[in-house]
Length: 394
Image (cartoon, rainbow, N blue to C red; front, side):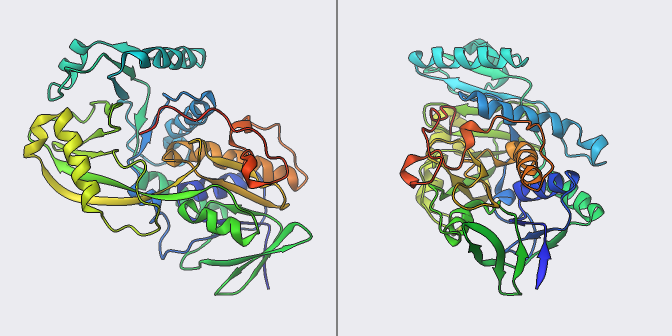
């Protein structure tokens, strides 16, 4: 039987980041198991590549800040250009009572050394003259927020993993986990079983299914999310901030060549593992877009992208050791923040696995808000109160 010191389930960005950090932490033989025929074809393939710092949760902001710092170092660390550009996010605030919430968010970011603040309607109109602003109170803007190319980031990690001797087995879905005396001791696949004492569940939308293989029920729900690539009838500067309408959740992300990605009205979309487009969702995105940017009525839809998000009840990921099963770890439920939080999640998991293997690290992150056992309804040992739900969601 094959053996490994650690098995990572899932070769999306969270999985490959975790494998990379495990290797850097000195964990010996690491194997990544991926159900698809190529890495990064699940949620990563539909990722828009945003790195957002504006969150109501300080814990979420800290993970993003670490991710942004690491992405900035990729050129030197991994010798690759990931097309990182600091174009920021712009939230359109349409409800007066929400201004105070955004003010608290700005104060929180300033404590972390990040400048953010309000912009008025005149500034928004000059920056994005195609927007309808009659109902907009103000905008919340953080210029340090950025975007990068998810495919380039994925390839950077994959190249590094090859150099570190990490094996990635694609087309090898996990069929079961072997648990004995409340500890994981192996992984079952159709291409042979593997003995290991550490399994990291980075399976994204399939993470809940993997947890059930260990006899654990965690509140992870896969939801379909739609994104439309459109040719805009108005000029779109590539360095325009990603614009979010806080009323509808609709967003527009600029792309080269007067194109844009639009989406964001299907946050509570279908619970599913298929990626078939749903016409009523597509229509809703277009209608919300036309209300906020009327000229989009003449836009041309180039393609529809349907991805899957692993959602948690409070929009904080589940990162850490899973209570009740020794050697079983989880990094899932990122609720749309997986790309920007992947570097931090990988680092945190590597520290936990290395600590369990006898090489304890100081711990770079306070994972209290991300504890997999925080939802009391699971009945898990170590369950406790969940953090306040994330409010900056779309």
